[in-house]
Image (cartoon, rainbow, N blue to C red; front, side):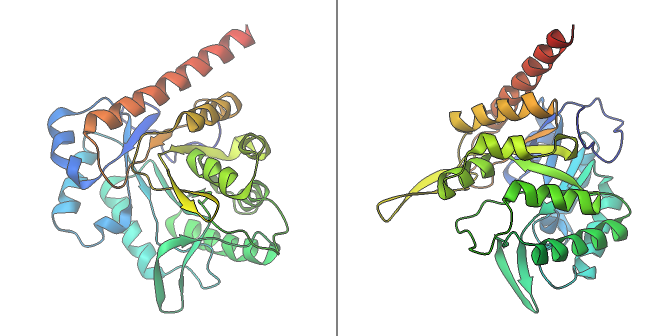
Length: 292
């Protein structure tokens, strides 16, 4: 496996492609054991215990679990919430996850908590704030985490660096890994007029520990369109092309298929995972032949 590895060697036979464990699939996954390598959950959905937590524990007996947080607000100027970290640590003890991650964004300020992942200006001040919170999180949990590049719909005038360079710097300064969301890169490229292939080429490959794939939606905006990271449809061909380029650069990195609303039949998610696995295997064979 290339790049920044998952945090432990799983006792499971590792398959690099996973899907999101969402509530409509709990029982079906337990009953049918679909052919996917691992499952990802948003830990915040399991803080309250009850039925959700019961299913998470049961599923973790059959699949490796990744915890992909959405509420740490790592980009905030305020310190990461100890209460939030305590709850994540409880889940770590429950399922022994293969990875813990969150986003290079913010969602909390003082006592205000917003139901969104809000963008950061890419400058030294916000980089320092982000790194302080990554350091706090890693020290508290006792291991390195992964941070994800966000989807954004505005850009700041006082950016001092591109997003890819900002992500590289955060990983260098804290020792964290990068969770590269390929669909988010495509969304950025459409909304901000960037070259998505150049973005991937700027990323330092040894830091990449995971990649995400998802579907998006185009919506009218003035005389044009805005691309929204909706996670509610299959991965677009343009994103598969970008993913192929990323795999060629970074190697066989664990990859997740995300689908968070308008849930399809489980078979559709499994088919998307199979497609990602075929690309990973194809690029691995290509690299092996090139090395001969």
